[in-house]
Length: 123
Image (cartoon, rainbow, N blue to C red):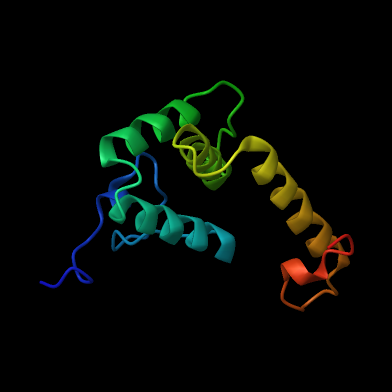
């Protein structure tokens, strides 16, 4: 089995929605991209699997979560952002600025068109 074929430990993340065959299920394309980015950063050695599992688990167990688990990937993104900040890769204000830019881009994008950061009217 090659390194590309080896399943990532991140596929065993707590509460990860899965198909009947055991493959991850993503509600939106951005969730799949967040998953892939997390796998990539883990494989590059940015954080250990145990550290990821701990931060994600803490986020998943915070009060106020959606009872149906529909906010799972929101928790995923929050956990990833926490790791990026704690490891000095990004700062909170940069992440917030980028999040707001994507939101403006989404609001400015015509229905059915791909959302691109270039669509942010303030960029």
